[in-house]
Image (spheres, one colour):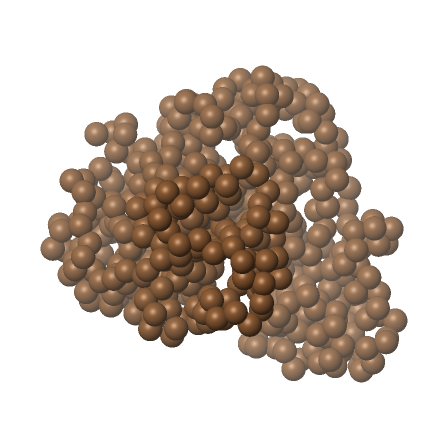
Length: 265
Length: 265
């Protein structure tokens, strides 16, 4: 049991809060029982895990621990103080694991038979990316393309806001030209979204293979995407609000796609 | 110009962070240029406003200030240090105003010709309520009923997360029995939502006057609402996620209502 704040493993976990260290070590931190369970169901080979029973709130943590033991993932018990040090939560639940990062190149993406791809260009906050991942996963997108080469998918706030669902959504990070040529090569119809256009998304036909592109919360999409797309669409607003939260907009758009594919096919 | 951290006005604003003081003084704090501008457009009679030009980032702040001056709202200039003290933001934009609270009784609600009412029972976090308000305002609900007598609409995090749109959505706070009798008396069809039922919201007819009821993020709705409603509906999920963020769910549901009312009437 680790009892020292100066323990090398403790220091190692804390260092992984930095993107540079994550890239160098090819490891990232997955905190929380729910998040680790999504990883286990996704066959993630956790390198090791840390636990502190003092923080366990219900049976789920013991179950996750037993599952990791069965998979021969090295388990390290940590006392309360040092666990609080490695945790990034105000109320840790006593579980934290290290997972290997993976490649997020667009060349590795494979799409299903009738693809639905979500593209976000220039997303600003890791928490927003996590929320977008959660909405995208719920509506079963084939893939998320993040246009922003500086984006770090393995940021702790992405993992947390996605509730671990980053393990479930194929994500590629790439330049915008690369994204367009990928979408074209797969014969996807490209729908760019903007608060500045008139055409409602309710009038579109989303039953064919489609890609839906959203810009950053602050700036939306610029002319590059509006020109690269087949259709420019908007979500009608009925009040004073001039935009929706990004993950809400994703939910509205993807839910309409799924509705059409279920009922209008 | 207020330069002292000990100034009485500074202390007064800080005290308004407490719900008890807000109730006693019947005042709340509206921070930020965007939020104050929504209030001005909604004819809110701000009691006074505080400004600090050192934080002004663009012309919007000067415009809001001029508008408040024209409306004879007392304006108090504050030095950077004490402004940071009254501000609750990491990056204040130099504007903060005090607004009178209002009554949120259900008896004061009036609905339009073809009403759409949103009901949330037991929402947990002020930030979530703000996000729900933002989605609800964008889709033009007639009113939001919050079932939770302890809820404080004037919490700073509600105002912030709603981007000031709490000024635009009629909100009532009440007990659940009162909410049901209100909805019944207005002849609204009540749709309760649950992850545990089968019937997709895509199959529903929302063209008649309707109320949509959602529970807390953690627990959803209990049997009270499922029994009190005309229909129990769910948002189909296509992945591993077992729920959506509350404001995302609100967006999906309301956007389908508006779609139907626009195209299937």
